Image (cartoon, rainbow, N blue to C red; front, side, top):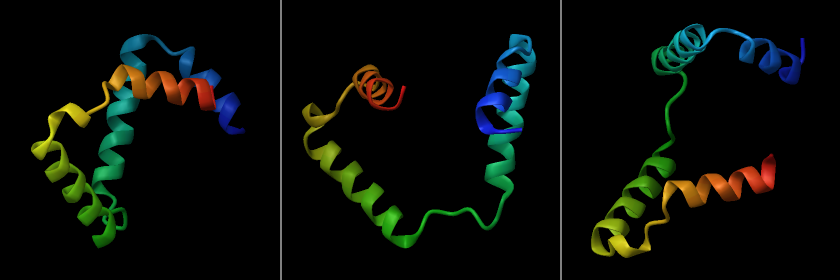
Length: 74
């Protein structure tokens, strides 16, 4: 089954089952010890957080980010 078919099948589930599946997926990522940000990714996240703390006005609202992502990737 390809990703699009799988996604379509999942979206046919009732909302409570989709929520449970999402939680199960999130937990599976957290519990996967091989999945960790690299030191470089952590350093970049810390740098961005400090930049935001110095100047909160640079933040882009989540709605704007999501809108751009949807426009770009569908």
